[in-house]
Image (cartoon, rainbow, N blue to C red; front, side):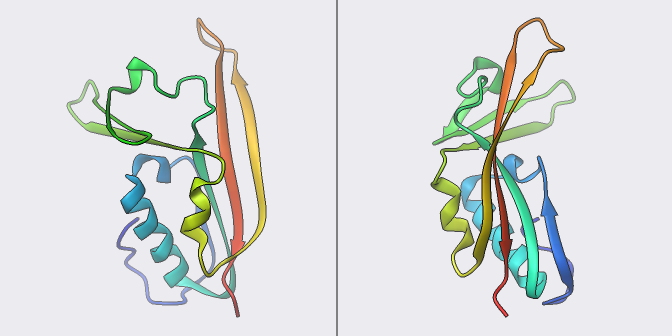
Length: 130
């Protein structure tokens, strides 16, 4: 995501759901800039971020905090997994120069586990200026 193998202005739409949360905040900025780079003028993008309001934010199951809102652990296969959380306004900085046309917080409850898990996401819909 931080080095997309596409020419500038190649796409009319860029989409990132439940994936950018695995980047550090520094790399998130780079990834968003890459998405903007490959967007055609007038193109749209959708990106969602895990919210600090999620019930599992700060949970020991996320592993060690390696940066503000950034948690890292080693999974059963020995791979390093990162989860990054943002407050409501924190992702705004990633969209400088873009027009945010819609920003919404979604809240979902996972009822399939032994404990209620509330997942909160901050979703951005933005367009690249013409």
